[in-house]
Length: 432
Image 1 (cartoon, rainbow, N blue to C red):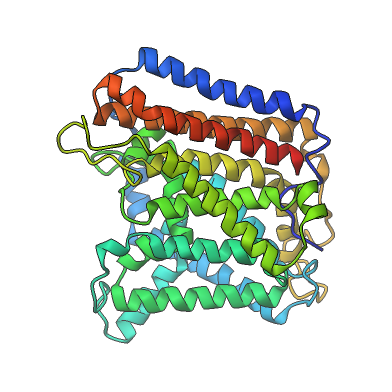
Image 2 (tube, one colour):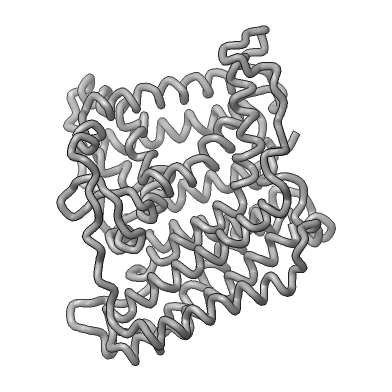
């Protein structure tokens, strides 16, 4: 059994590759022209619509947060135990399905809809608080984390996960999965004990990913700290442009690109299916995404920039988040919809002892939930929509930093890079 991202192939979808890629690129160019002509001033932030104060009070109550983290810790511990002690066949073991499908693919819609859910339920924060108290270590650690480190550890952690998920020869082996989860937890807890809770904010790749996706959520914190409905663009504006942010989003885009590339007929027939080739392919797609973005930022100079602004790759890095989100939705939507059912099936009898805890042990995956046409529409809308939102966010940021004419000129390289990414993403989607 191989845990593939999606069902079947995309080569049988009812829209030819050429027209689909051309339409996606044209939509992006048209949006740029419209923005250039009619959006010459910065967007006015929407103050948002607050939810009832009781909702904020319940969500922020320590008991609610602790309960959520206890539930998450119990689930992680159970899945890890099943990975080590459960069935040897990955098709029958809960661990790879729960980790790769329910957690990794599921955190995308959860974060896009409800905000940074991983940060809220992160069980490692609970374990760290308990260990710090037992060891009599201050919650803020014994050393200060260098600001120059930024989010680079999170980028490294996400790349390591991408390598495990897409390249490692034993990636679906339950013991491999359980070992990775355990090792990742040990590293994160050790870092947090030394550097304090700030470690999770910058160095926990899964939490950082959820926070970035959560910036696009219509549900978030308003200026006064209350929960409320807001514009996703306002959420993107609040993402702190720290070192390593470019690395995080480039890893997310590049690894998803490799996921699509490695499942094309060309790759399967022309490239040796080995660890070396896979590692080089993953590095190459990540590097390509980074180079494209840096080329897109080539016109972002200090010349003519408004006072107080420091234009550059880091300042525009959060505008890549919608692209990463679109790629994730396109690649993981069908995976979560169909293979996500297997998690519930296996959870009912995790050790294959004849239990039926949830009454789902006898179920089989129902592939009637969505047709290929529906999947195709979701994938195309996710990719093109992500690039359109990214284009809008980048243009809005440019007109804040430069006079309107100069702002438009700085976006020509960025538009070229985004069109290349869009056409490439659609091509990989249909070639897989």
